[in-house]
Length: 245
Ligand SMILES: Nc1ncnc2c1ncn2[C@@H]1O[C@H](COP(=O)(O)OP(=O)(O)OP(=O)(O)O)[C@@H](O)[C@H]1O
Ligand SMILES: [Mg+2]
Image (tube, rainbow, N blue to C red):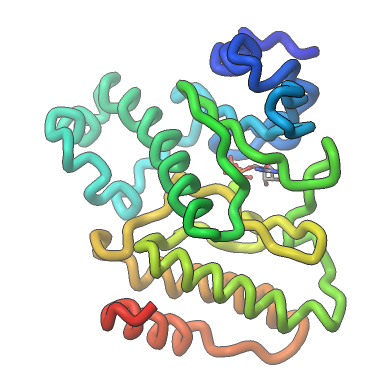
């Protein structure tokens, strides 16, 4: 059992709240966060959960990309100013904002039926969610998977349908690639939402959508001909603007 207070006080809270009984091991340490495999408390009905613990700000690449932050703070002008000035308060606000934004986005999308891990709760620097995989073994990233010939077209259609469903809920992932798609039991599950943007509010929305579609089509091009991502983006965007999604 790992020392929870060393990792994050939020994990200790999850133990107190009887959501998990222990933190078993790290699944992966990424740029922004470390994801841990946790044993779920028997009350929950689940066996394992994934806990995504964001890094303390000082040890994180400060994702300062205004592209993703547009309109994020418009409800709190004071926070927006602090954030713009990169003051300590601003950095703290931003830290909370990534966790909160990822939680909100995943919750909305899961409720809408999108193929994302089921979010369980969030606390401080951590999001607790469904562990996608077999028992404690996490599903592989799509980039590590070689699809069987009969899966190629159905799974491309599935991921395009997911992008469309997100857009219908005003969301563009904005970092979609085979690095943020899990392959499990013949299905694709999209993860990693802190940078997701609101399609109606972000002035770069169309370019971010094109980039997501470009990454997806590029991955599928190893299996054969793919649709033109720019044409797909244009068509999807036109339907989005016409409120036809
Ligand atoms: N719900 C989950 N179930 C199983 N594995 C997961 C889950 N969430 C995340 N992972 C694993 O943890 C890794 C990191 O998660 P995520 O992409 O959300 O964080 P990140 O800090 O942005 O990482 P990276 O910098 O690698 O993109 C993923 O690549 C995936 O292997
Ligand atoms: Mg990731």
